[in-house]
Image 1 (cartoon, rainbow, N blue to C red):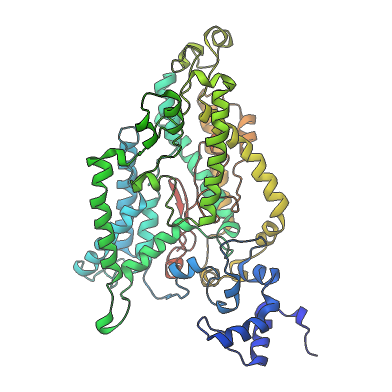
Image 2: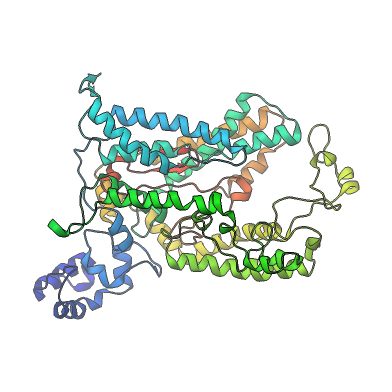
Length: 556
């Protein structure tokens, strides 16, 4: 009995249609075959096709629907195809001694330097990109210099430095690239509350806050990594750089051959380095070009609206790439996401905030329009010690005698929208994505309609119960740190906060396609929590890479 079209999967229907029509679907067909392909495959280019191929049950602005039939063994997203290969070499060395030596060295050096500079101005942040670039010549040098001898059966020099080793080193370096938010807690306790507690307390609270996201992120892999629609634009940049450094291809051939990727990268890096001297040293006004303020420099209202440092920066522009990419590189962020951020910023901070300020709502007109400092009713920075008892608890009588706490217009509005976002994101996810979340919860990597997930399915991953055990240990650390030391933070409050551990919404994103926005940042003091390196060959080296500030899981 011949199966009906409805009983066949999309891939089987494509195969049947292709065979009966004698059409071979390739990305570069001539115009006549393109028209024939469109006629034959048109019935599949609907919602069902999108769901089957991408795993996305929503209107995805990054998806090229017209190319769904061409890339069954590659990503349906053009940006992924451009940066990530769809092949794998399982024999390529990964967990080598030199990779671990270089990676551990970065994992020690970078966190130490970043933490040292964290409380200093100007602060210097060493990110994973530095380790990614410097690890390449180090790995190549190790492959050329280190003798080929074995230690406990492991070769010191297994051959050329591979892209998988490079990815593993970069992941290890990224573990400490961002300072732990818990260090802020320790610093605030020392500076503002004169609480100098032991190293045991400090270690427990840092581990508790860091490993919390590590454990939850590991369990959420099937939702935020496996589906093809889960694209991380910032990580595509790292993938492209890996391919650039390790690829030997050049454009053109013979006398018409172009420059290599490495040479182009060197030219671009050198040009960026030289240009930065202008806005960073020679002419710093290029960083904050508030030209309107130059016209009327003594007008207070104009400086409040158009000033770039303590104003709203209306009509200001910059020639400094550090300012342009402050919240994320626009080269990696999809245009629709940038437009969404810009529209929200213009509406809330260039229209709503001035209305709040100039109508003196919440007494904001008595303070600078944009600042992160909290004030008392004298217009001075708020003196917390005046409203505290000796045991660092709030003294309501002294609070009433001293002053309520006042915030600037932008600071107050930012806090309000952040808390409002917690509820809105949760409701939006339940209304529009509950079916997809439930579907992904029951799928394995092998069942994902993504070539990269299928490649990864060949390798044994870390079981979910491992992450569950880490979660249990993390909760234990949290309770111990709260109860053994006199924090005056009740367990029931901790459980209440824990019930809103994370609100994952990969579909609401400020910076790019499907990057989760942490709306519970102000509750937990925890920020961006995932770094996923998905690079085919790199995939195999690092199956699931989850970085939660200073914690990462690497499955080999």
